[in-house]
Amino acid sequence: MTRRGLLRGTSACLAAAGSLGAALAADRPIPFGSAAEIETFRKDARYRDALKRYCDVIVPMNDLKWEALRHDRPRFDFSGADELVGFAEANKKALRGHTLLWGEALPPWAKEMATRAEAERELVNHIEIVVDRYKGRVGTWDVVNEVIKYDPTEGGPYRDTIWQRLLGPEHVDIAFRTAARVDPKARLVLNDFHFEEPVPGAAARRKVALDICRRLKDKGIPVHGIGMQAHLYADKGIDVDGLQRFMRDLDELGLDVEITELDVIDWKLPADPAQRDKTAAALVSTFLEAIVSAKRPKAIVTWGLTDRYSWVHETFPRKDSARARPLPLDADYRQKPMMAVLERYRRGLA
Ligand code: 9MR
Image (cartoon, rainbow, N blue to C red; front, top):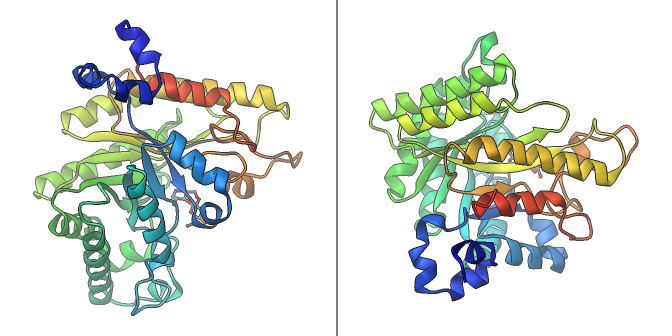
């Protein structure tokens, strides 16, 4: 089999290639994964099968958030997270942990924290317990999620959250320092969105992300990469030059990149499903080309697998009430053109 032929093969074929597969280590496909939502996971066997079939990496979509783990202040509820972690481990999937600090998806009591001391105590205690429970199992953590102000050109750079209000910019330091202390082998990531549009706000956000990581590194606090959520708007463009510069800046800082929540927001596209799928695939292709041609991501993760279930339906409803088509599989689990694009880029065949 030629090298190209081998690369075209399935992962099963690569695994079967044994030492030849190992010799191609540098060409190993970029790990692909998806977020998994617990209610759907429990009720839909096809959803579980799709996770098994397509994913190298699983991310509990909501079950590691404070809202899920901490609805009772004194007692951690790991039921959902343990179920998804168990499934990932049983099926030899890597795990991303999402997320140790976010200004949203908080239980009511956490939104009512009132003092700096209380916020710091709760944050440190939470990270110690959660990271320790999954030590050596969750390989990568979105340590902080969405800490950058939506448009830092209008003041900032930090988003106004309970953490920022009570702890100031140090909330980021505390989160990374604590996660690193509890699991020194975990990869620690700053995760955020709106990095890719050709607008000054997105460029400012890229700069803030780099500045935060540089500041952490200067203080000796470990940070390994930036997670680009990549909720791509089909009606907006991609700043290819800006992204490529971003990849070079990440390289200079010794940081990884990963794509963490990829999907396409198609609410402004014409109704025709085939046309929408084609546009979405082309958009994902433009985005991945910009990234992968400059830097190999550690993982490419979509925010769900099938159009049957996605946050995009509720958050970006279409005027014509047609279902959104944000993901690589359609509502009946058939592969869409986006899946072929993902396969091409992760196998280096683009
Ligand atoms: O898709 C998630 C949805 O089910 C939750 O209700 C919501 C609040 O926890 O979070 C959604 O996921 C978000 C992710 O955690 C962070 N980036 C934006 C995602 C879409 O809102």
